[in-house]
Image 1 (cartoon, rainbow, N blue to C red):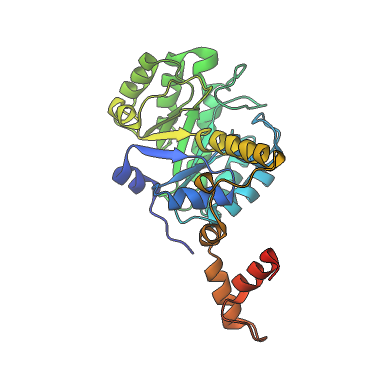
Image 2: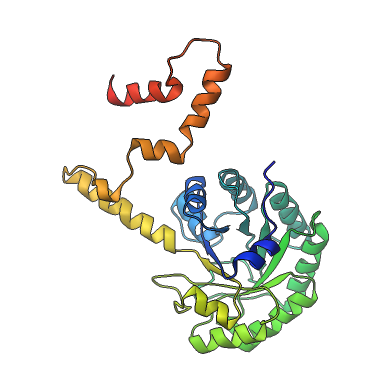
Length: 306
């Protein structure tokens, strides 16, 4: 079993914690190779990759947890998982916490939206009474088996109720036992500063959806100065990857070869997916004789026609 650094220790050693979103296992591997200290598994990127649909409550716990397990297995980094609204009442929250802790998540956030929940920067959100969310937070705290499993309480109250209500809710969720607060959707630099000042002494998170979100882009260092310890970037990698795929497909339709400056080659890809590790296992344990290259050589022969 992989022993990941606890989420609290990760924040202490790396604040501000810049958290790109991994919607699949390959992205998680690339995030680790890029030198990040941690990452998030967010619903926005995950559901787009799984089904090409928006993040509007079309998927539920079962399929999301299964996908998250695949992603977590691809990287040794500490990971924060999007637990949506906990998928129901305190019983569902209990199952959600237990399951994500069991598959190796380091931290989990749950939010106070009313179903059907939606991406935090979309309009039309509604929130549950704070008492209902407090019950969920207390259930989540009781459900974890390891006190290092970090529980982040997210409030989406800014959009329907205003920033003051969001701050009040955040304080209530902390009193209920949450380890940190995640205030979604501040719409200005002034609101970012107000939230940062309100939670200066506790782990604080928010998200910046580049190219379309409601929260303005501010550099990570400036965000940290305002009081933010965790900054989630749900769209950054996803939107860049989509653009690259569109360009590759357009070039292919026009009969253009793959540009070496904007793509990896086969050797680089093999390194990312750890082909040599699997070749070593094959050569070590399979009875039938293999050439020196093992599975790598076999695959290359098939690809090249050799």
